[in-house]
Length: 130
Image 1: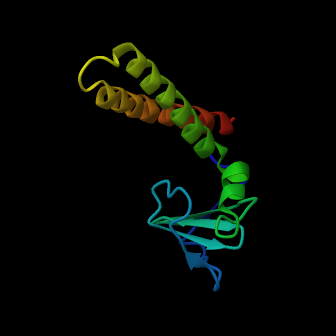
Image 2: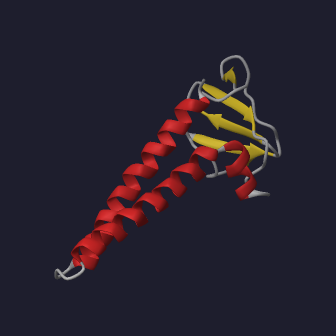
């Protein structure tokens, strides 16, 4: 759940600022389309719009948007990279004299990276709901 998100039923009012732009930036959360109008992020569903204000417009400052509005993405990426590299390095050191040890360590690192990154992302996203 996003803080200060407003639900606007389509049956009550068709809501869309004239200058809004359809965008792929942002998590769709099941929306059919999403739009941006400055810092306003609008998700369109079949029966409603969900609207909230971002602190930073990702079209103007993508890194600032990740830091202020979506830190769970950065934390997921960072934890995935750190743990994946550590696991790959550890496995390679243990098996460096075995054939295909480099490939095995890279694959293990990538697998752990994906799992850890997603777990960290999910955990931080859940924390933001409280």
